[in-house]
Image 1 (cartoon, one colour):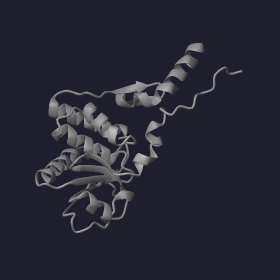
Image 2 (tube, one colour):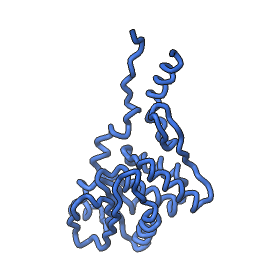
Image 3 (cartoon, helix red, strand yellow):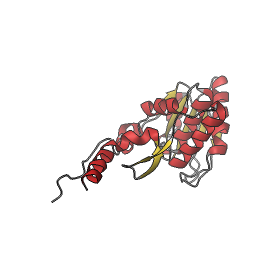
Image 4 (cartoon, one colour):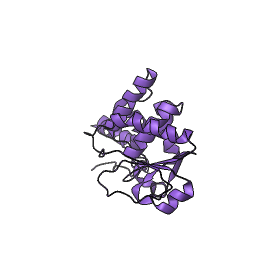
Length: 204
């Protein structure tokens, strides 16, 4: 007989649970918004005063944008571990800062507002927001709990931070609960599973 069954933990899948945030536009800074493609409508863009849209969803048809949006940047990168977002991180960061300096606002979206668009916002905060990558992650996560850049994008962000600041604040680590390598800021998502597996392994 098995003494313990694997617990159901809200923390293990925390990045999938916050549906209210998933289907909302998150204000990252007063001049920067993050969301999924379904939220990008003319009425919402007008209400927020958005003048620039960054679209990181090449698998979707081109979104109709109102005339108030005078800039539209397309990032043709798919959400896959083999994809290279690094050439776009600083390019998009520079654009967001330029729009801010002009008094405008930028909305960044991908399909779900979880991986690609979140990565682009993190890159901006590292380059122009005066934040370390760890600080940027916690800042964006506090406003949109569902963000989850894939491992490859996080490695590219770590490289960006190293190049810009000479140091790194997030590490890729092996996690027992995840059964693989993850950014250390994701470890709390797997804490219950890791504890369970540690007890199970220790008992065998």
